[in-house]
Length: 298
Image 1 (cartoon, rainbow, N blue to C red):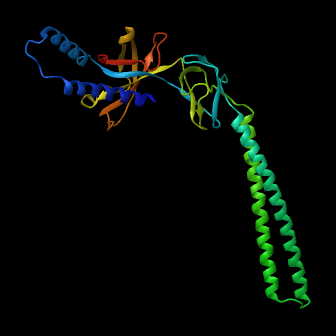
Image 2 (image 1 turned 60 degrees about the vertical axis):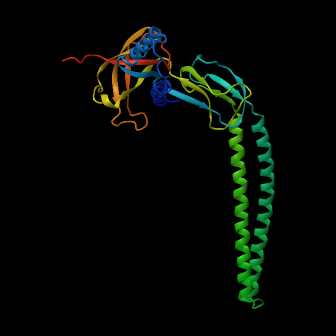
Image 3 (image 1 turned 180 degrees about the vertical axis):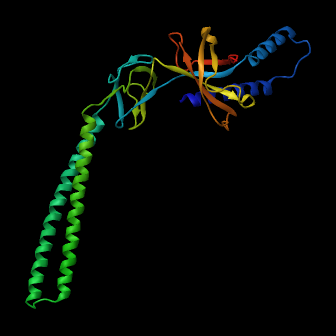
């Protein structure tokens, strides 16, 4: 899930929870546990009155490691959270389906080569027949119509030979592509970072082009957040903000980098992002946080 979708999902989930809580709240019963109810109401108000905007920490860079062919995962050499380097093997796919396909395409190539050879012989025969008809026409032995027929047969045979030759080249290209995939069935990291997501387990099937592992940059996080529609204009690029991570009791500084020029029609929010300034170590991507604007310097 992208950081944008995560922020939207977070915002919508918070809104839905508040709506459901208001809709499903039972009718008040006079004097029924008044102190507990008052405490609950105070907690709800405290949550609603918290300053700032809901956000999430996200990696500056990420890469999906995809399957080069359809197969099953034979090995997984990493686990969630592992640090990896560019070119490091992460997983290996079962190459048996690929070898089976290679055998099928190799057999198809032999058949195509046989058909091409037959088509070439037919083309040569048609051209020889055309030459005979032309010589016979010069000697007034055949008519022009017979020569025209021979010319048509020669062109038809020549086109058949060309199609057969193209089929051979197509099969050879398929085989070359399969052999290239077989040279290395390992999936490797395309950049330094950390394993953020494993889409499959050992033994699971994965389709060609579909992601197997997600690697994110482990040394640079930024924060994505949403600004309510009624607070448009409160923040602009270059503004200083605090990023409050309540679950870890951490507050760190950040600078707003981008503010979307238009309102998201679904969430009714303006999406924005900020770069962290000297963030503490061991921050994790995906952590929910709150962005609080600092007073602007005059």
